[in-house]
Structure formats: C-alpha cells, structure tokens
Image (cartoon, rainbow, N blue to C red):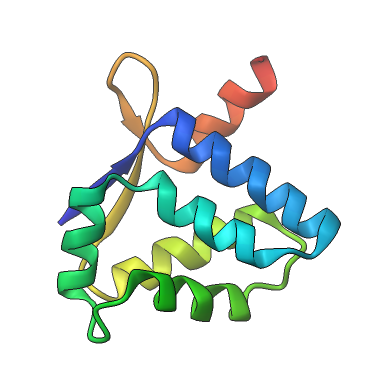
Length: 110
C-alpha cells in the first residue's frame, strides 16, 4: 500500500520537528505527524499495525529518533511504515510524486 503526504503535510512535520529540536517538545511533534495524515489513511495504518494505535507507534518512533535531524525523522517514519507494508511517498505541486529529496528543493526555493 502507498500513502502520499502532500507538500503542506511535509512542511508541517518539518516545522514541528525543527521546533522539537529547538524546544525538546516531542508531544506536539507526535500530534502534528498524526494530523498530517488524512483520517482514512490513519485507519488503514492502524489496521495494518499489530497494536492498532498509530499514536503509540509514533511515540515509539520518536523515542528512537536522535532529536537533532529532521531527515532522520522522515527516514524513521518511512521505515516504521514500511515494516507494516506501507510505502510513504511525497506529493509535489502538480500531482507529481517523488522522494523527500525533491521536496527539499521546493523548500529552498521558497
């Protein structure tokens, strides 16, 4: 199964992760990551998770995060979801789908 995060969702996670790095508040980051996914995607993720609780999975993932690299956070999220058969993709404006690297170029241009 593939799940797509749009540019807005990726930006929100990046901003929240930067705040978490600066302030050390991962609770807000966990909630922002959860909110970045549409409800129907969360339902599908929870169906595939053994525990059935996406927030719990995010908490475990954030416990494994070093807390100082946003790209590492996305890698952990991708890996965690891949372990449950979910391929995380990123949507660029115009409907094109690419890896996270393509979105980095978009952020630098803005």
